[in-house]
Every structure is written in structure tokens, then in C-alpha cells.
Image (cartoon, rainbow, N blue to C red; front, top):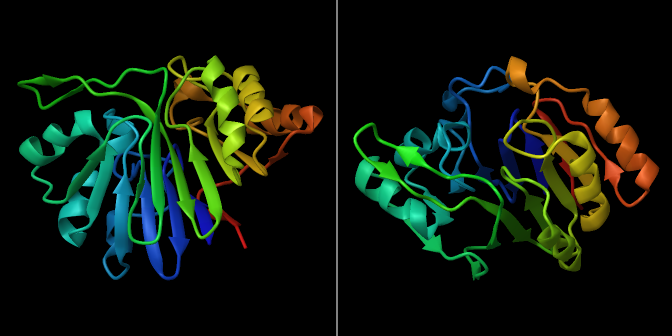
Length: 232
């Protein structure tokens, strides 16, 4: 299985010629290495959305409608996806529930972050979440957008293979807190996300890697768009 980074917080999981997309942000993402047309001849099994902000859902509607694939998200985003953007296949479950799908499992856990979304006439209150995806005895943790808080200490019990952690934004963790999170989670690999997409969130990702190495609880992997980690 490959965990492919596409810039910002967009991660693609590729296994057995199937693709699971997490927080697809393609249009208006200056760091993304692909276009939506890249998937025209590639099957998408599911799209996982951690929360309702534009930089995490921007390409969900067009990809889900074109590929007729399932969108997996929190219960609170269900009405928006089905009633506002007319996505036909939306699977929802609450925070804390582990649900098996066709060949993979998904667990949403609460994040410390906002989740408001609007269709310019109504505001929808949604829950921000982390997501844990289990595929073929491998476990991937995507932190979405979150601030550091004590519950992240519990993630290590899941034996995480790859942790994707936001490292720089006034709305998420800073580098020092992301490094602390990496030391708590103790994933085999820790990958920085959600940085350098805009001028306000520019940061030295190699500083994150250096500090994670000093803790010696995880191996840092700084990925550029279209680089990946192979999990065998």
C-alpha cells in the first residue's frame, strides 16, 4: 500500500488498484501536483472528509459525482453533502465508532477545531475530526485540523504506521506541538501536512523533522507533492 501526499492535507491511499482520498483539495490548491482529470481513468473507492472547511472538501463534490463513489464523513456533514451539493452516496457515523467498509475500516475521533460550512444562504455546524484508517493490517492516522490536546496520547494504542500531522497554522498545531503529538502517538512514520500552501502558513518542515528525530519516538518523513510512503 502507498500513502501519497498531494499537498496541503490531501492524502491518497492506494492499494490493490483502489484509491481512498482523504480531504481532497485540488482546485485552488497551489501545492497540489494533480488535477481532477487525473482520476478520470482511475477508480476511486471512497473519499474521507475530516471536516467541512473549504481546504478539506473543495474537490469532494465533483469527484464523488463523477466517480459515483462513497463519501465517508461525520454525521453532521451528511445533510450538507446530500442536500446541498447532491452527493448520492454518503456514509456517516458518529465520533468514536469504528466502521468496516469494503476492505478497510474507518474511525473518526474528535479534533479541537471549528467545522462551520455555508452554502451562502445557510450555515451548517459540523464536527471537526481526526480519522484513523485501517487497511490490510496497516493503520494510517490523519489528524485533519486540530490543536494539541491530551486525548492524542491515546492514539499510540492503535499502533499507527503513518501519522499525518498539521504543523503550521494559526488554526492548527505549531511545529513544537506537532512534534509533541508525534512523540505521544509513536507512529512508525510522522509526516507534516497543512503548511506552506499560503503565505500565512510558511514554515521550515525540516525543522519539524529535526525535532522529531531528537525525540526518537518516530521517523520523520517530509514529503513533497507526489511523494509517498510504501507500507509493506
